[in-house]
Amino acid sequence: QVHLVESGGGLVQPGGSLRLSCAASGGIFSIVTMAWDRQAPGKERELVAQISSGGITTYADSVKGRFTISRVNAQKTVFLQMNSLKPEDTAVYYCRFGGGSWGQGTQVTVSS
Image (tube, rainbow, N blue to C red; front, side):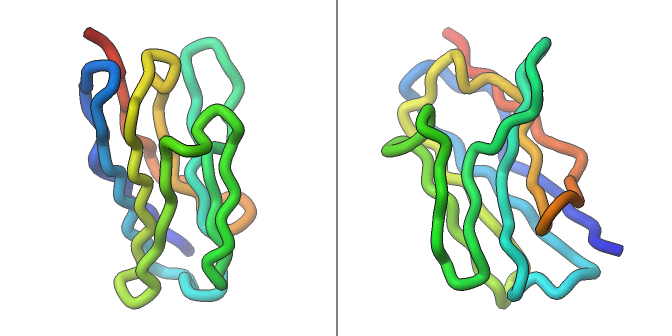
């Protein structure tokens, strides 16, 4: 049973930055693709970024060049560095382990 705990969300002004963290326990972290998804009010959950066990990254077009996903296998932790944040980035951000285990989510609000 995998347990994921996200942290780092909050309120930030447009153009600002946040760094999300996700700590995993209970799974074989190093061999699994990890991802960040987000869900805005009234919208479906969508992929933001993912990183394979080998470090290959994929990003949604809307965040390319602004967000960076990374992982530290020894710490069973995945990060999402978010720069140049926009109001449309406002959502609950979820860490995903492999194909479908999620944490409780962390709220990111971008507003002036």
